Image 1 (cartoon, rainbow, N blue to C red):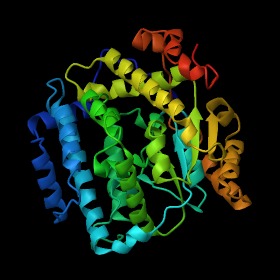
Image 2: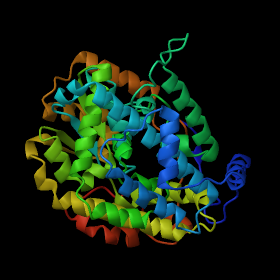
Image 3: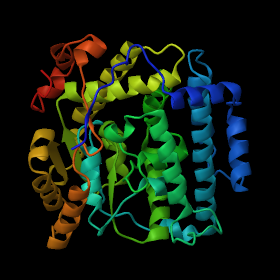
Image 4: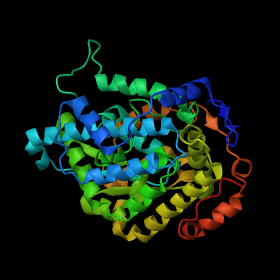
Length: 418
């Protein structure tokens, strides 16, 4: 059990030396944040120039306009977006190159995936990592989703470690320097199982920009106005590429955004078993709003804690309104609803229920592999964050819970924050 951590300067940020260093470096080295600059940098990095279907450029332009057109954004925010966009564009180039040279990849089938979804902070991360511990499943560790396609000619080093793992490990240390609370909130070490929207980011369409940049209203409106089915088809193709590299197994996937995209998800993966997690919305909102407000001290010249809280309260409502509206699209015999309190009380029993619904034998070996993961990753291993919704955001649990009555009427979750 780690120590209890409390963010005491949420409204009046005191930057660490590392945070100030990153901000200063970005101010002294401003980037040219344009679609053309991103694509040119990706082409230079890979030696490739065929991005495949070019509709992604419109979405990339919206991403860039969201940040470049906001005078309240810091140069660090602009540099961060540029760096990540180049990474995604480079990954897209390499993925399209592999698909062009190996069209047989399209013949691979993605069958009966187990898909975990639910709002952030509801146990989805722990649950998918438990499931992924069963070696019969295929999953996506962060080092692989960071760079889905290996650099041609680049093999493991003398130590046998994939260079992509090492680069991901280096990035994790940078993340921890910019956010000392990150390990306690959402570990991003290389072997951590990542969200499958990381592959959709190569197609520049997911809700990711909203969390990366704390708020992204222009992108949100664009994203919600477009059918996401083509981007779920892109995800399926990307999974085929990863399967081609490391062998066929039943996939276990996870992403919060599936909750508001059950239609596209079931259209593209019609035989999926869908696991939906539930938790007191007050605990959920105060948790990720706190962390995103903390991250905003580097992203905004004048951070607005209340605006971040309101944005993420609305996003949580948006996800659950869509999840309730479209719940019927998931066949009842292939849906598992997991309530946080019951899950915490009996994690292994919860996992056994997922196996039963998915029609997968819960073998002694699978149980042992999962238990080994649990033993090595105790809850709050890196510390737990103490929240205070009243002091940090000036609202009461009752005021927040009132906005989620539509959800509580359907899913009577146990209140955690009083």
